Image (cartoon, rainbow, N blue to C red; front, side, top):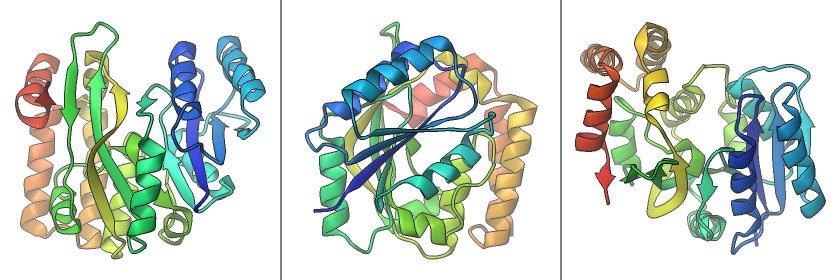
Length: 272
């Protein structure tokens, strides 16, 4: 039986109640984690510290590593991967809720498929108001993922489980605002690492129109430009695909928020 680390990162602007719900969802897994590593990305609020202390008392395998200052997600996760004790690492966001059998299903998949370096799955998106309830599925096979990565992120980051050794050999997370995971997957896929997505819904992912609006605009597009250039240099896209992806990204990111939300509902998600 493998051993599993769960890797999380929290910073001062996060909601204490969301963090509590997220940690609780890991504690009640059908397959108990062997380690939860929480990276404190810079100083937190008193309310967040209280939640962390509460769960340290409840869970002796919750380990905390505090960064002296906020280094942003890519650097925080890179440090976390280095510090995780075990080879199987499950990523978890501090505002989402893991399905009770998430770790059990992913561990079974990774043990049955030793050639796979990274596995993810579907998410069920929800909001606090109860007006959003939809499933985000992802491409399943290596071939489908290699095509999908040219235009969109092929994994739901909060669902992934990966092999620590593979992540480190591929260069680990880098500082790449909003796109840390997409950049890492692109580098790994270009090097031949094996990816899969399960059909199962593994995480309930919290979302909002505010999140859609934040991932818009010129600054976000400039980060995406860098990613598209990286993919072209890695050989993931040819020149035509590179230009097509740049144009498509520009159109989507510059849409008004209401139009982007409609497009997500109409074309990119399955509402249930």
